[in-house]
Image (cartoon, rainbow, N blue to C red; front, top):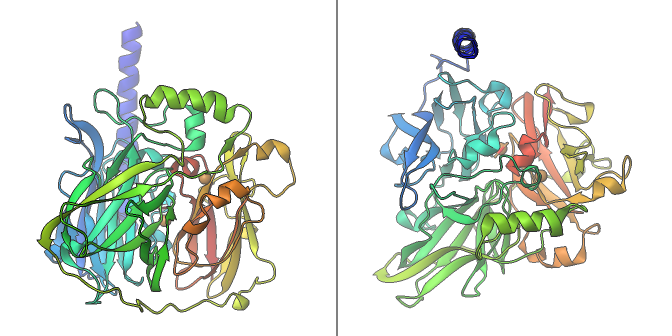
Amino acid sequence: MKNFTSIKLIFLLLIATGLSACNAQGKRNSQTGSGNASSDFSPDIEIELTAQPVAMQLLDGPKTNVFHYEARLLKGSDSNLSEIQGSYLGPIIRVKHGQKIRVIFKNNLPRESIIHWHGLHIPPEMDGHPMHAVDNGEQYVYEFTVVDRPGTYWFHPHPDKITGPQVYRGLAGLFIIEDERKSLPSGDQDQPLVIQDRSFNSDNQLVYVEGSPMQRMQGFLGNQIFINGKKELTQNVKKGTYRLRILNGSNARIYKLAWSDGSDLKVIATDGGLLEKPLNKPYLILAPGERVEIWKDFSATNSGEEITLESLAFSSGTSMGRMGSGGMMGNMGGGMMGGNASFENGEAMHLYTFNVTGEEGKSLGIPQTLSEIEEIDPVNAVNYDTPKQFHFYHERMNWVINGETFDMEEVADWEKVKLNTTEVWQFINGDDGSGMGMMQDMMQLPHPAHIHGLQFQIIERDISGMDAEVWNSVKDGFINQGWQDTFLLMPGMKVKVVMRFRDFTGKYIYHCHNLEHEDMGMMRNYEVLP
Ligand code: C2O
Ligand code: CU
Ligand code: CU
């Protein structure tokens, strides 16, 4: 009887899923701009990206089950698409400003998915809003023109509530808009460094946060660093000058980047491309989703010497309330990690070591002018005197923005903007003082804030509400210059950004790029109205 019922159930489920898949397929195919390529768009580059489960040899012993973006170049040149051998990461897509791109995304994952092009200024239908997610067996076609500045962008899944686990399993890739500058390192001296943290069980399978509410609240923190989707954490380099394109592709871990030889980090670019001039930093805070480009010259380093990119210890300002740090978190950390591996955000760790060989590479002097940046004057903002305020905080076991969580379609009045206007938005880590007051303040975490569809400029970082010890441990690591799409909002911090809404109308999202927070609903729509 029991058996019969479950067989019947499975049978019914099969029919039901089959039917709904057909329906969805039919509907998608009849819409332009989603399931089909359009005939009036002639791309310079066409790529098929298939997301699918595969088993990969990442560690010694059993293979690891991951999700992988399998890429096929349908149109373009070999330089447009490159794979990182042995990596779970997707391909590196290299394009030029002005090129027309078509990407056919095929979903062979067990769950729905959609690709988001992080940092790009493209129409809402091309941006990977969760409302456009497609089911297993379906496809979504992207067609857009690259209008952004040369720089290091990236792509990753964006389905509602399950972005964290899909990125964690390996779905992410770099999208590089190349510059024509001859004075910057190129070829194998221009290289990516995608930093991620992962945890594995004894069968070499990835361990995520399932079944641990406190870990989910905090965001996933792994005990092992992966660079460019591989566990090898060393690399030989020539005596020459390197351009390192660093992406923090971690779900929730924040890094305090520094060189082991004590030299400054020479920053040449942020999220939205080259700065006006290089910036020297003793260390750099890099939050999930953020990119930074570093100039590193190994020309004068002795052969055989090793220089390591470290993450230094810092205080993240995390407070998980009375049930938090000491008790539950402590136990969990110990249980999961064992040995000397670390769990908390802010632990020191080695990230990646460069072994300087005897081989001569190309040496370059750092240009004192890198690019021109057109400043947006905040005085021209329609709301200069009354910036929109976005409070990121915790409320009743939820991460919220102004008390709200994500709704697929909903846009509040304070989330509506007008095309061709400039606005100032202020992001605040902490509640607005009304409501449950003290109770809410018990849980505080850093939140990397990210806005889709555009690049903005940071005009103010107010630290008056921050804990002094926390601020002192990170204060030299922030960049306010250049174009950005993601910035770290430390507990108590208030950040004002200015942006212009151009070219496209419709709904985009903004959210916390701690992917577990995003999945819990710390995400909202904003709408550009005509
Ligand atoms: Cu990396 Cu919603 O984005
Ligand atoms: Cu994004
Ligand atoms: Cu957050």
